[in-house]
Length: 131
Image (cartoon, one colour):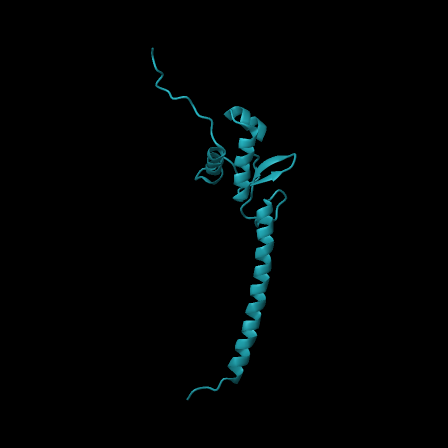
């Protein structure tokens, strides 16, 4: 009885699929540019021989990393990195919440900086100079 030298091919996991597309999006020679649509999840699942949920999970990982956007009924698209996270339709809800939080922190820091500038001016005006 002969044994095949090839091991049976194992179906990729969601992590494998996400890693493959991450490389295709962020690699030195990207295959996907901002705005490009990734393959439909159902089609890709069929090509790879995996469940639809596996591809959806992979795309979800990429969305959570801020690499892609999912638009209901349209598909999954490579996100433009020049756009602030959480501002585009289809952004991860986590990034949307984080963007709002960061914006409020930024505003608070700006106000604190202005207060500090005023305090330094007041202290500077009333400080005696040394001989």
